[in-house]
Length: 314
Length: 284
Image (cartoon, rainbow over all chains, first blue to last red; front, side, top):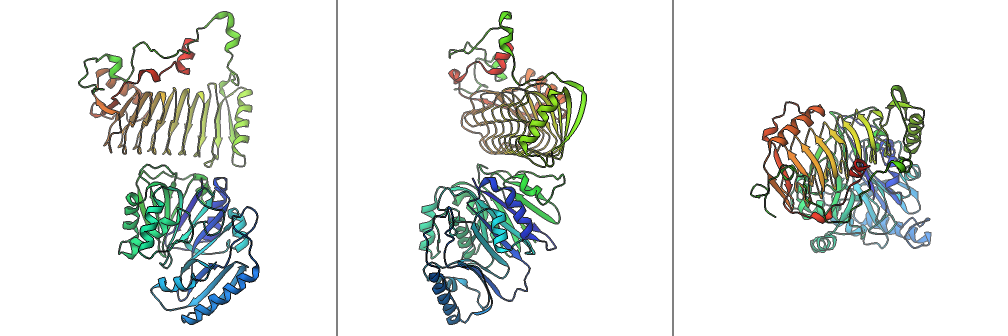
């Protein structure tokens, strides 16, 4: 089933970590195999923030195979070595969990493709997000568990999207969890509720164009599809509109960039979305109760129609 | 099957989407016998007094707790209940099988007022997916917007949304009326089998797709027609009914109904039909 939620504050920042946690926790009945956050935090914009994993959470219910923790340390060493070779300086390093790391990197590039390919050539290493504002945090469990595990409740920023997952199309693991980074674009992330039926056709075509897939989760296709459209020169909104015909199946998805948040709904409107829009805040989720967690007062909400695409700026 | 515009069989009931032919399917008809009156007891119903009124704040209740409390209040004879702070909770007000004035001061989530038979409900907010699913009788009025599958499989009663509704409005409906003041999404009237839908605004693609029977009236633009849906001529009885219904619904009273489009099923699938529960009640 899965639940998605997102919000964007226009003209100000807010405690988006805590707000998104409340929204996703309200949707936990739609799935709590894993939960993911894409938070657009306030930063000085100088350094890249790279969230990456060197292994999987092999806790209860995980689809992943147990690995010796020493393997994680080995992988981390190679990451550090590769960063050094590419001239990327690690400014700050956090290792929240043995498999999950956050680096602030002083690195001057506009093309993250080569950078990402190099890092991800290390077996077992996956970049969860790369950007100057975006941080993707995803792990097994419900929204509160993940929020507590990574201390997300104090993150201040302008916008965020998130996903509460009931695994149906692929395994219960971090690599299949949402949000997906819009590789190799800085600060692009995607969450999706639904099923895509032309996944393999699109995947093969995109792989032939040099795009990478880290999981077999159909939702990852949306991130890669939009990223490819943007590589070809389309705006975010144009890419999303093209996806309505390019992607087959049922879907409601959100895409976020450094300064915008967008939603798209398939032409059959088979997946739910409730939307609240005001001058200073847009909040949306699979169910109204998600919005109620940040706006408990009576408000006007509506369901976007079939085939609708909307994009908001901060 | 031919468009009704060109059909020679233009009986009044046909033009309104109500057919009078003898059904050849298996009947479930039961006839009332006064000696068996006790066997027709409607379980879970209460005699309530509309003048007996109370408020119920459900802010800190789960949906089952709230519904249980509504049931408890009805058992005490309360006939007018005002629900405070519904806050988008799912499945509120389901399974009410007797007359009741129920007022929600706020919005409902999914499946609000599902499987009801008789209450008069006013929701001063919006509703999520599948509002009033399987409604048998009564009236549900939504002051704002509604989600998808609005009035799915209703068999009777009036379901009124003053705002816009999502996709698949009236899917599989088997009777009753759905009236929408705003726009409706894709697949409105999908597989509808009987009853009437009125949309004053625009509708999305595949209107009336695979409809078996029933009638859809549209005041605005139509995205596209679904398979089996065809235009039909508005009759005087249609216009009278539309005016009367919109007036009773307190919605679009000044709307020029003569400009509405009427859509019916272009095929006849007679054997799908059996006597429906609302008709059984009538027989009983």
